[in-house]
Length: 256
View 1 (cartoon, rainbow, N blue to C red):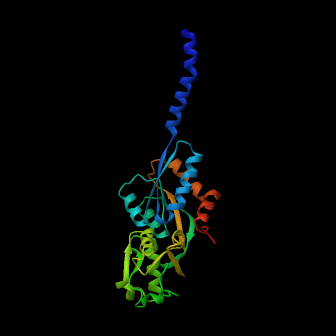
View 2: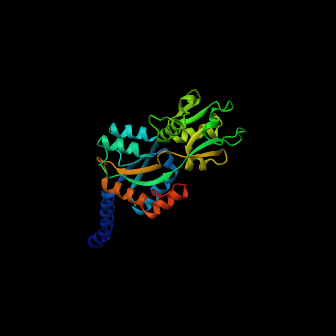
View 3: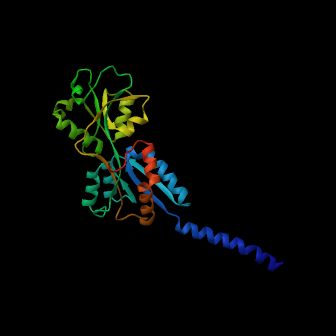
């Protein structure tokens, strides 16, 4: 009887050991990404977890500048994806990312939005000075890339100072989008991919030419708690499968 019991326990013990070994290598990574990437990265994270059973991806979305501040203050982040090259450059200058290790993975466009039922015709940014446009949502240029692109465009067109009284600063691009969708403002600047998410509530008045292309870089942090898993996630974003997901949400390839 003891022998039969011992034989029964062997496969059970093997299974327990296998589970223990699995738990030992299973990893949880934290990905901090620009707010505009939320929908696409949720899908990519699901793909990652399917390919690496046991691994988990914790997603943290906010304005790129806010994410950089979190990382700089010691937040345990593995992967950082920003909505502009400037924020990633700042991460490199602070020693948070290895110089030259970030890679561009997507492009976007800047658009001028209006609430769906707006009766004011806007053909370009000059129209924002009209009396019918009293409130304009933009990302805060101090910390939000879409705000920096917007400010540069308005400055180039000689409109920045004139529009100051009308500007409503948003903490990230999704907040600016919400302001327009709820008709709390008369117009707003967001990315083309964000505008597409609420096509039933907003309309694109104008695709705004930018001085610099809207490029998204991604990198593994120097002090990433799980560097190998972080590299796997970054590789998936850059892979054809990751690029397919990004394209489904309206993002363009990183290079023309």
